[in-house]
Every structure is written in structure tokens, then in C-alpha cells.
Image (cartoon, helix red, strand yellow):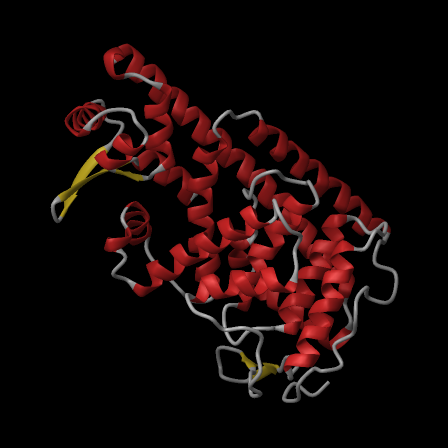
Length: 356
């Protein structure tokens, strides 16, 4: 194919040829098993919002980093605690990604994955109305400025290919959902329906697809960290499908990504639960008068906690809430910093776990 010409001949789904080889099926079984274990662990936790909010924030950062939108943990957690502190435009983009993910997740309760939902997610990510690409000239270049891919052009053609993608996602066939996810991911990136934000939108669609298929109940497994570690293999895999039709290697890559990420996420969840239990024991032993399960939940839901969060949760009025957080700092669970007139209490142990 000519990399400079729009790929309007992008084949419809499902792909031709045998995809479920012995190796692929074996890998799919392993990935599904790990995913089921993660789902079971998360579902055993009464307040899943604690884990989801923290892990989603980290995913938003990593997914944006793939697009060279880089923000530090410090900038991000400050902005998450108070959007007025999001002075870095990159931090703002990361928060928009998180907002888009939650919008997609909540939308799934009322409607399936559709082109319209894809558009809504992309527009939240970009913070403006963008719609499907209409203007020609979009090209994908590498770091040296060389054109490596030109996606399909023309709104009608793009919508037709998205319609085919929808039909494939919801078809009642015997394709393993994780294999279907690998196909979905390539096809969406190849269609490249928006002027900007395609990569981030595609990665949100990945997790929503797992939720829609019942493989997870909460959006807690994200492939961005794995993709960042294996960026060369990721882009080579995408390009080899386009130019050589090499689906098997790509599917194996995504299945390995799912399996490895499920293992890492399960360990991260375990580490957070251990840290929460250690905090519970310390508070009950050293400051039993301020102990409550809700207090522990709040300091592990917000890496940068503030007095207002305790007030909103109904735990205490401002003066008492301040005493609670100051006591936790004295116990070594939190460390305070002052930014302007506001004091923030940092859960350094949580940040360390999220950053691994």
C-alpha cells in the first residue's frame, strides 16, 4: 500500500483468515483467567470507588503520556484535588481523559458502544465539539517526520467503517471477546475518525468493551503502562496488519498485554488493601477516637486530600476535619503541604503504590 494515500480500502470486519490458532486460544484462556481473578478481587471490596478513582487517575496520566502529553504526579494529584490548581495544560488534558472515561462507563448503563458514544468521549477528551473528520490531509508520521500511515478520508467513508465496527462488536459470534478486543483496537486506530484524540479515545473504548462484555464490572484494567513499555512492538504490530495482514502476532501482543496488566493490577489492588489495613490498625491503636472506615476510604481515594473532602463526606465539620487530618499526619500516614490558602495532605504510600 502507498502510505501517502488515504486507506479507503481498509478491509471490513471480521478479518479474513483463521485467527483462533492453537497458540492464540491458549493465550486467550490464560488472559481470560487472569481477568476473572482480577474481577473477583475487585468485586470482593465493599467500596470499589476507592481503588477505581486512584487507578483511573494513574491510567489517565499514562494514556496521555503515550501521546506525549506529560505531566508529573505532583501536578496531576494537585489538579485532581482542586481543578483551580490545574495550571499546566497537560494536567487539564489528563483530567479531561478521566472525565471522558467516567462518562463512557456511566453511559454503558443505558446504551451500548456506538459511534455516537465514541464521538462524545473524544469531544470530552478534547474539551470541544469536533465530530467525525471531514477535512482531508490527516497523516500519521513517525518521530523523524516520515509519513507512515494515511487513514481513510471522507465523512461518509469513515462513518461506514465505524458502522461496520459497531456491527462487529455486537455480533453474536463465537469469537473470544479478548480476541475481538484486539481486532477492535486495531480497526479503530486504523479508521482514525477524529482530527485528534484517537489514541486516548481508543484506549477508553478498550476498557468499556471489557465492561460491556461482563469481563469486568468496573473500569480498572488499562493497557497504557504495557504499551508505554513496549511502544516499538505496539506500533510495529499495528503497521504490520495494515501492510501485511499480520493479525496473529498483533492478537498475541494484545492478549499478553491483557494478561500482564491484569497481574500487575491485581498486585496493585492487593498493595492498596494492605496499606489500608495497616492504616486502620495504626489509627485504631494510636488514635481510636478519630477512627472510622470512611476516614480511611477518603485518604485512599484522594492521593492529595483536603479538609473539604471530609466535610463533603459528612465525616466532620471543618475544624474537626482539620484535627483528623493533622492527627493522621502526626501518625505518619499523611504529609501536609500548603498551596496558597489551602492545605493538602499527601498520602505518599498510596502515590508510591500507584507509581509502580
